[in-house]
Image (cartoon, rainbow, N blue to C red; front, side, top):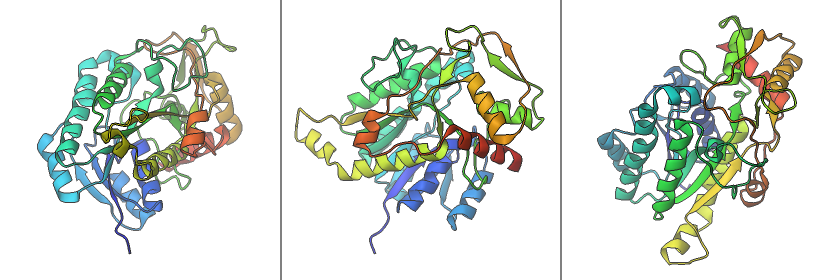
Length: 345
């Protein structure tokens, strides 16, 4: 029997990371998790053990810890890395940009140095549609020029992409994903923000659950059909499956070998939009939640929030064709799974 490939998953107890761990295992890989528990809980590891049937390797630590990261590579010899570990809230990044640059940019550099030292040259990078800034046209393609970031969070993702492009010894599948929502269908893992949620869906579900008094919709005067911002929402399980498709490509494409041989037609850095290709306004999402669950959402429309883009959704033609991946779960499923997870918390 062929030994399973070890895949280092940074931030593997987080929302997207934990679901990807499940999908990696199902696809025949062996996930090795590191997480500093900044925005996750150790109980997620227990839930993963229940779902996997075994307790995955877990190291509590930070990607900024050079000695720890190097030790992980020596001990476990991962053949590829999926890098989730980053702060991710637009509003928080506006309030505390230094924290975002330290963790999201310096942490990536530390990780890359360890990878190079241990001859690991494959990465799936967790990027974001925020790199497009306020796009001139939608839907956005991978070739759409990036514009000045609307927040420090977006700026850290842009900087990270530049760093990865420059280090062309490393083959990178850069996934620019849109707005992950939902939860595992068992409701055993899902989005678990610590403190007050920064994202729409967990704040919405906590409001319906009575944890929050009311949901504030930030801005009702945008130039959209109903005045609220438009986003491309994607089910977290679809997103997790996209990461497995990207890992598969890293081990089958032989692209890095062509780069090292000097093939000018091949690039070590590939970028893919990961979304459904459909944009929904905030009010449309609220209405979809109410229809899917039968619950009423207590909300009001407030002022705009700093750093928010008006409207962005994905053109997914490239990822559909090259990775053979497409989103399968609709908005109603996203809302049902998110609410079932909230009720199970």
